[in-house]
Amino acid sequence: MSKTKNKSKSKSKSSSSSSAKSKSKSKSKSKKPANDASQMPQAGENGSPSAAPSPPKDKSKLLFDGPEWNFDIVQKVYDAVEDIALNEMGLDIYANQIEVITAEQMLDAYSSIGMPLMYRHWSFGKRFVMDEAAYRKGMRSLAFEIVINSDPCINYIMEENSMTMQTLVIAHAAFGHNHFFKNNYQFRQWTQADHILDYLAFAKSYVAECEERHGQDAVEAILDSAHALMNHGVSRQRRPRMRNPAAHAQKKAAARAQYEEETYDDLWRTLPDRLEDKKLSPPKAKAEQRILGLPEENLLYFLEKHAPKLADWQRELIRIVRSLAQYFYPQRQTKVMNEGCATFCHYEIMHRLYERGQISEGSMLEFLHSHSSVVFQPDYSHRGYGGINPYALGFAMMQDIKRICEDPSDEDRQWFPDFAGNGDALGTLKFAWANFRDESFILQYLSPKLIRDFKFFTLHDNSKRRALRVSTIHNEQGYRDIRRQLAASYDVTRQDPDLQIVDADLSGSRRLVVAHHVRDGVLLEQRQSSATLQHLAQLWGYRVKLIEIDKSTDQLLYEQECLPIP
Image (cartoon, rainbow, N blue to C red):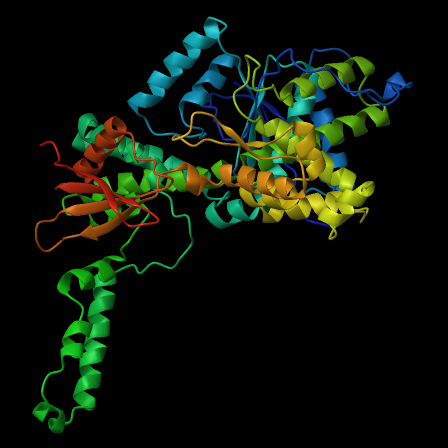
């Protein structure tokens, strides 16, 4: 594989930073490419280019001329993009590592759930065969780039890209996504960019070692079950956990007994027992739940710590899967913002390169065609409609915030008094990129103008009625209701079932009880829930019971049990 490394170090400043030096060298190295949640889709034919500024007149300033590229040109373009991103826009990024990959390597990246190093599992090969067949038949296209949230930030770009597209994806991934990864609070709280590559190397070697010692079938059985529970292997709220709850409980009991001995008075022995004291003493089951930290939403964490039959190597495999699930959790919560940030950055950088005379009119038209296709939002009746395009909504909101900062209307001043007309669009955007996720970002920054532009409205679907009801229209209260309901649709906690382990009898029958708190009367799909419950039972080693309870009334709606297969 041909590889070019670009390393830049920058310090966060309000408007500018010292220009960083980057080193470029071409190597032939076989390295597996990686995927991530941030990947730019292949442009289609929808959309039309927007108007561009006047073309450059001095061709001697051009960074390149034509579609062909080489590593020297890539380095020159990277330096120019870096100058704009760091010195003019004030972006704060990790050091970059840019690698050029082939279409087959891109397909390989798709198959391994998005990591540069990955352990072996049969599901990855299955995914690769499916993606490759679809690509060869022309049923799907490939991304222009893939970017990894790591330090250094790894950027994979396709060798089939033209030089214009290489410029675009460097601006998009190496600076747009990179800045978002480094600064957004979700990524700073839940991921360690400087450690993830080392951990993946450990995970790959550890799984291979387990296969040699315990057999491939035994390892895959644990990984199959852990992958089935992967979406429920995340901690949504950061809270301190006791490393040894049993020892902590014993320590508290000893301290309580010592206090009772020191304050003992024989006079209390003569008093009759009170009924209230018996009621206040917790039963054994309640005490056990408190020691185990129940209820627990992170199913994989609980199994890793408390499953009775798992060996140490099996617990470590579960921990590996759980760590990967936690790594991807911020990306699920910031898809609109992440892509909106990267798209806004590449749009600004490409226009500034053009205004400097560093890219030609032909390159600008190629960029605008690709960009307008990426941010195109089909109507609901369009054959290509698949929901709200995160690139379209994210980029439109970033542009709208810039407009509100620079040229607000009276309506904007009423809705956004904190930043309307402040003249600092980049400062406002960087504050939003750092401190919000999709749900809160839409709830705070979606404007009535954008609601009108996208023609948003809400429908109320009541299963007891024959027709749908339009519940909100374009008035002040309607704008607020639309914004609130659209933001709620990006809340990851509402997309996933609310599953919690509520009881575990470790001293008796060993039965595990999992509760599903039902929202809006929507029960789990029975066939899939039964299959997932079987995986949970395999890891627990004993009987597992699932109960579905209405979240508002606590009424029991459904229950089922499952035993592990010997």
